[in-house]
Length: 318
Image 1 (cartoon, rainbow, N blue to C red):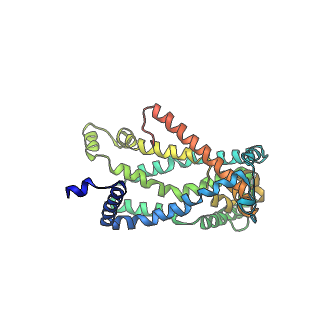
Image 2: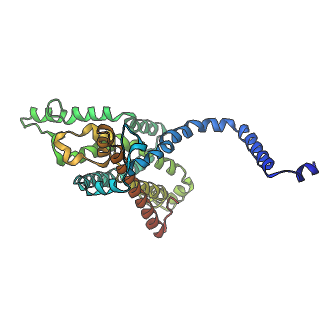
């Protein structure tokens, strides 16, 4: 054994270490099997498409491929930033994201605080199940429900107005209402599902803190203010930073299903523009350019927000 160890060559040592690693990996094969679907998802849909980023630096020829496409460097980015559509898309995207940030982002927090105050565990679970359900509806179903509520012909609201002797209102054709209809859909669909993280965080709070607060004479409002909300601050901070990182990404399916020629001015965002250029018109270079621009800006916003929040004394995401 001594002579064997002294005579181990570098290549043999690497093979020995590899064999040891494989033995350890095989002993935990169940865990790796559970990880396999997630790994395949990231490989196929996240890591694999990275090679396509080079389309943004070529005048891509669909029939000739990259080998027969002209290399143009950053020209596609310059044309995109100079496009007359750029500022319209930037305005619409930021407006929709800011409305969601101001009105939707606090909604799951408030709902989680309300659900946490329900005394009966059975009644609490029933309410949680009810508010979770809209999340599992597709945007196709949500847009159909919205049509039957707000449309001019069969909309429930307009039927009430007509029965009251009023003129019907074309809610879905008014550009000044489009962003707010999107907000209404998002709040109804995602608020309940968004409470999961906050309720999980609240469940980790030490019950002795509430008991001590009761002994000191604190009421429910005082306990929420001084115990529950401070416990939620780290989770809120992380989600807020991630939300800022997705400011240029809005719900593509939702907007695509809800837009119409009457609201085109306020419904054209980066995602729909990328879809129109890349998929419908075959301009893969332009579509890739838009996505890279969004990714770079999102990275800058995440790093900036994380740095500012850490300077205030809070923990960031890294």
